Amino acid sequence: MNNRSSLRILIADDNETDRIILNRIVTSEGHEVVMASHGGEALQQYHDAHPDLILLDVLMPVMDGLEVARKIRQFSDPENYVPIIFLTSLIDPNALAECLDCGGDDFLSKPYDRTILKAKIKAFGRMRSMQAKLGDHNRQLLIEQQVAKTIFDRVAHSGCLELSNINYSISPLSVFNGDTVLAERKPDGGMHLFLGDFTGHGLPAAIGAMPLAEIFYGMTAKGFSMEEVLREMNNKLSQVLPTGIFCCGCFIGIDFYERIATLWIGGLPDIICYRSKTQEAEVYGSENLPLGILSAEKFNPKFTGLSLDFGDELFVWSDGIIESRNELGEFFGEQRLLDCFNDTPQESIFHSILNRVEQFVGQANADDDLTLLSVKMVDIGELGLPNYKNQRGSLGGPLDWSLSYTLRPLSLKAFNPLPLVLSIITEVEGLRNLSGQLYTLIAELYTNALDHGVLELDSAIKAAPNGFAQYYLKREQQLEAVDQGYVSFHIHHKPLNVGGRLTLTIEDSGKGFDIDQVQQRMESNISYSGRGIPLIKEICDEVAYSSTGNAVSVVLTWPLASTD
Image 1: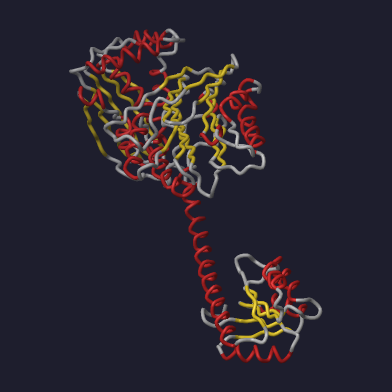
Image 2: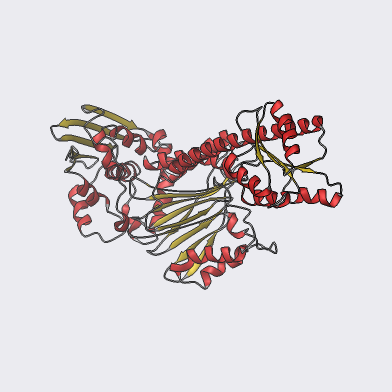
């Protein structure tokens, strides 16, 4: 269209007199005219002149108007719809109906009524104008949608989903997915995974996934515990989601050192732990409400702990999998899903589930997002420690500083100081690349000070394979009862010509221990416990215990990143 009021109109009529009359009427209204004297010329003018409206005679040589209309509708762009008004002397209802069936939008009887003709041109002009506006809005919507999709993908998929022990598949019903899969490494080498299924589909559901992903990735990378991340996610969603919108989910925390998985399932279908050695599938059901329903005060997550052997694999899916329907309206169901675990080799289970769902649905249209996630227990050596890259890789941030920080009973009971301490230390930009090692170091030293110093727990409890459960039960009981004692952090950082030097001292109020005796025991240790001191020595340049054993100082130097 030239503008909103002036149209380019193609007049196709083999009668020269009629063309002249129409031309005068149309041009007098301020419109531009393109003319054709037969059907073949009309089709050519349609392609060459790009008219906004076509006045098309039914009976013409070379190609009649009906055929011209059919070809135009066959090859025209649906987003650039050009109205066709047939010009006819026909009065037979069937013939007039055929004009509309072959692609016409209206017809005008000969001889022409000037008032009617002008009114119809004006009406179809308004339609073209509205179509142009809708096209502009649609193009702008697509651009905004693509930008939003790019941002969403960068936020929601910025973790470690590419790792070799993870399989996932997301099949969205629309551009934006109502399902969310998140995975991120913890600074100590562990991993957090989350599969979320928001009520609804598309953009409204995806909007909820944005704050969810930001909290998940940010807090996991800083070393916050699974419960702390979950509480923050629930708190945020309960604040921002409207009534009736919530997020069913499964949160998995994996400790690759101790081969433990911790599960939180809230409103999502049962999940499967497939045992590699016995080829048995263990089922674990939801024990929690979805995220975003309960207030922060009422949110009390329940967890399930699992000991895993190498090769054991956890499978999680959204309800779109078991509620997929075939052309008869039947659900795929849980039994067909469980059959995949009973008659398929482990390495094929993941793809077998997807293939069977696809075959079951067949030509039926999907009516929900389909998401499947699996994660396998592997040796930490296959994954390595996470690498949190320093974006600037230079000497920056606070360089010459000291800090002392003491936690007393009320704080020891309820507060995890590790993310805070790690955050302060990694303000030194050169130490940011060492976040994983630093977190491991701080966690080991703090756990030793709290468990063995303040709570006086004995690691020998963990010597048996099932001793971990007893140990952590006793730890929980004694931590609840603690009413005296402290753990102090003393941190010093000094810049060097080629980097910096970090000195960390952790002191507790305990009775201490004979460090020589403990070190000898560590050297011959083959049990599950006791990896702490050797691990600390691997990370640090210097390790020194006080004579009483209730304070340990470690030194770690870091070099400037190479500028080559």
